[in-house]
Length: 271
Image (cartoon, rainbow, N blue to C red; front, side, top):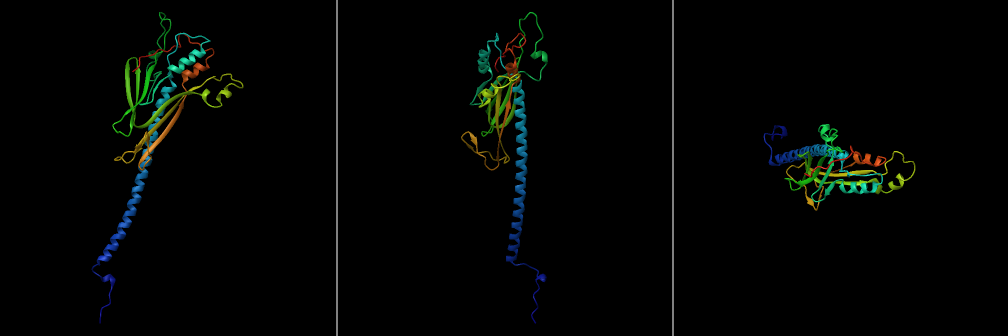
């Protein structure tokens, strides 16, 4: 009598069975690999986004601190009727901007120095004791990576020049000076109603910053013209800030607009 076949007593497998098991295993491993890869990429993207955001905040905070304390060389003489002349003076001398490559230079009061270095002690032998500001320059320079630019900050105070690299992953930056009187509707707003304590003009700086980063360290973003295409693995982050300088704000609030011996600002040499 022929013995009954029992699958569990089988001591070997056919080639078809082995191939089926291998195919099922490959499908399971492939799905697990895709899940792991997707989770890793999402985690890296999140880490890079957080890192880029924190870097942009540090840069904008540094720019804000400098612009809030920014100033300009004041005219030697002025009177109550010199408002128009002073307005033209401030417009021409408040910062020097270059577009290509970007560079913005302005005067500012230094933070990390002694008070007597900025405000000299009274000297009866001098007619006036001018304030001593520093000259700060933000500029974009070519980076080691041809797809990015390097943002540097230079500060020159009493002949000492300090240069620091803020970021090597910058694609675009600009600092624009404007005033609210140019904005639609603001002119009619400030010229109506009770205006006690309200400045007749408000100067401000509009700061624009664009950072680029890739979490595929071996790759690089693809450029098209002057813009970065947001391809897979590339993060392009746009940031902006609005800064109102205290020096010019107080100037517009002052009644009458007159300079005296202690409010003049000296102009250091350009770096």
